[in-house]
Length: 276
Image 1 (cartoon, one colour):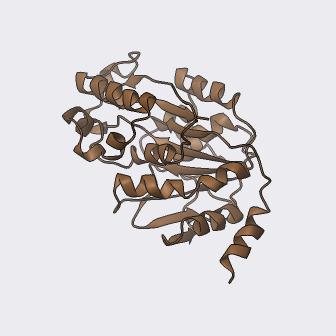
Image 2: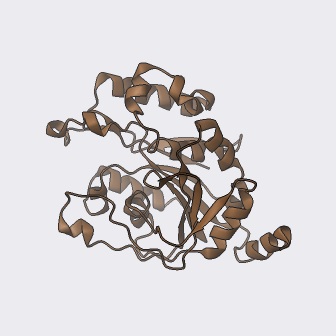
């Protein structure tokens, strides 16, 4: 198979566009899918600023795998990968189409990294619970790219850069997770308190935000060697690494802005990033 010709043929299925923005969305509780709150409003306001994409490639915290996979089915299922929530949340379906063409192009762009075309996963709540606020009519195809849990932050940053050609094919690349994400320490009694965080969470948020705004990404890539506050904020990397994909794709002259930039329940942050 002539990979280059194949890639050109696949690319022809997506029209050339201006460079698409990049997003990292702090997705928070799955209940954000059905509740009305300031963060959902933030996602809807964001949607008004976005060009219409040809498709979405989402890197979700909730597809953490050994190796790299990409969803390749025509109609991905809506995965309700959580427990203990109201039936209304389990009843939500997000019937966006998949895009086997985008899956194959993603696989080719990431060579020589081996990427498995996956027919089983679907859309987990890290993707559909936020994308449904951007595109409520489910009229944009969505493909998910998994996060290889055996690899370092630098690996993921470098891998993301290989996807840059998708941005001029109308592909909106979305990382979905939470920068400060320590579920073990959540203060549920104060969960409704606005912008409430423990001292270490406040420090971690400020540190990360300063690095983001300054464009100083290396300490963020090397998160495992940073301060005690960041270690508490990132006890496991799956919710943090989608941010690294977003940063890996940023062009030098592009502007980075923050929204939904608040702490929640003491040990979570909803901070989200837009790059364009």
